[in-house]
Amino acid sequence: MSGFAPDHSGAEVRVSPNFGPRQGVSRPDMIVLHYTGMETGQAAEARLCDPASEVSSHYLVHENGRIVQMVRESDRAWHAGKSSWRGATDINSRSIGIEIVNPGHEFGYRKFPEAQILAVMKLCRGICDRHGVRPEMIVGHSDVAPGRKVDPGEKFPWRLLARHGLGHFVEPARLRGGPVLRLGDNGGPVEELQSMLALYGYGVEITGLFDRQTEIALAAFQRHFRPRQVDGIANRATVETLRRLLASLPASLV
Image (tube, rainbow, N blue to C red; front, side, top):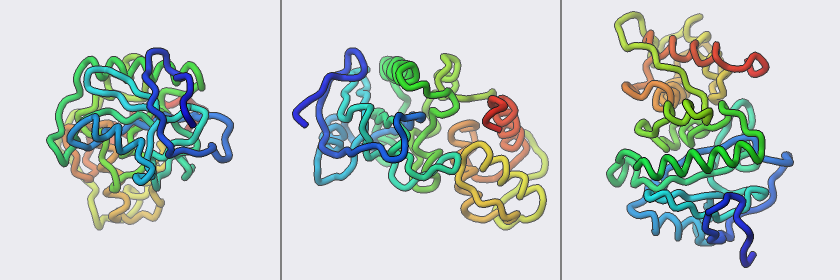
């Protein structure tokens, strides 16, 4: 492909060869947000357009708010990898991927600049309007690939996006003492926790045993929805926040 007209007004086009047709869906119904996790935005942009990398994203948003589109929204970009959400496993086919320039945890994770976040929100709004993406279907890479990925990380302003109708968020419950569930525990309370995580969308098997898979999914949940303490331990604040989120979902999704 030599070029295409951008789907998002104002976006620059730099074509990536790393894409294919969507499979099993006619249009995307999710947005997956990433950070680039590389030392520079230029290096990330080059990698996403390098055929040898076998990775891509629909969009990349630089720290100054400049937006580059690399794959058409109608096509399937290669950004999510092995992942799942709400029982679906081919997340690439059903999503739009947005890479947000940030060095990430490996190279000096830092706050996302205001100009960058404003551009991300405008981009997400356009995608939602074009494809009918619901707020609760705007998620992080760490949500669909817990344990394998941690981006966009605990500094990403999910609360701000949700205030603008972009993403699902509730005020986290206050941290306080009380009973906790952790690795190795078992029984009814663990089964209830696993059921709530799975109902929200995380790929958790409901066994009644607080295993490593449950700990990893819970940490991903905390990173997105209660980032002050990401430890994979289900204290009262974590469980209460999860209950609030489920209660605030549309009835058709619960």
